[in-house]
Each structure stands twice: as structure tokens, then as C-alpha cells.
Image (cartoon, helix red, strand yellow):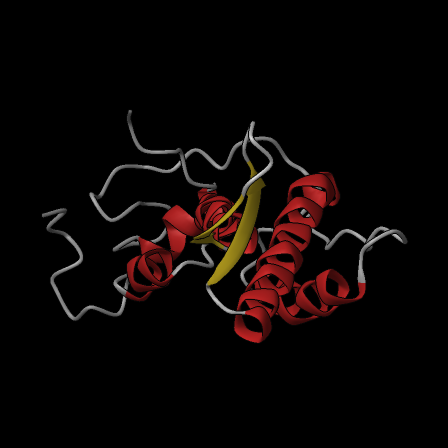
Amino acid sequence: MGRTAQPAALKLIKGRADGRDSGGRPVDKGPAFRRIAPSPPSWLSEEARAEWDRVVPGLQRLDILKEEDRAVLAAYCETWASFVTATRMVTSEGITTEVVTVGRSGAESTRTVAHPAVSIASRAGRELRGFAAQFGLSPSSEQALSKGADDGEDESNPF
């Protein structure tokens, strides 16, 4: 699977010259959306709203948010809330749990299995990485942004 296309603003931040990406290619600015942060949905959970309030100011400074990003941003924030809830549950209840089963003869047996919240946290973590990459919020995306125009190399050389 190929790389996900990045917004023009992220390409320009990483670029080596005005209007060019890190490879020296001209960047198409794309459609002229109004670049303002969307308002948070009223139905966000408390943890999701806290994440919204944490990430939106930084994304706004990068000038990559638009009102139409509301759904994806809300999904990112709610996925974060699910990750936090599942992680807290595993922390308080343990990584494993006991399951009691009753056989055909009526005899009970107990076995230890992974706590269900472990897989919820794992799945949410994978989803978070995908959402975070869309907005430049993952560590690798952040590193890519920091390699932009201030890398000290000759700006006329696209390589």
C-alpha cells in the first residue's frame, strides 16, 4: 500500500523553498478551503473533548485545519478516549482475567485469558496512528515536519 497523500500545508512546511516540497517539486495548494478550526461536536466524551482542546491549537497554528475536518478530528479524539479508557481498565484490573467455563458434565474449569480491554487498547492504538498521521500528530510525522526548510542544506538542490 502506498503512502497517504499529505495536505499541501504539510508539504510546504517540509519543503526546501517557497512553494516547493522537500524534493523541490512545486506544491499544488489544492482547493481554497477556509482554514479555520472546526467547532467541537457537543457529543464528545469528556476525555475526547480534552484531547480536542489539546491538539486543535497546534493544528491551527500549522494552518491545516478546516471546518470539513470535524468528523475525522472527532473520530481521532474519541479513539483516543477509547484507548485511555481501555488502558486505565487494564491498569486497574490487570492484563489477564479468569474465565470460568462449565463443561457438559457440569464440571467447572478456570483458565486465564487476556483481559478484553487489552485488545481494545491495541486496536485503538492502531487506529490512533492512522488518524494522527492524517494531521501530522505522530512522532514520525512530527520528525518529517522538523526536517523542512531549516535543515541548512542548499535550497536549490532538491536532493
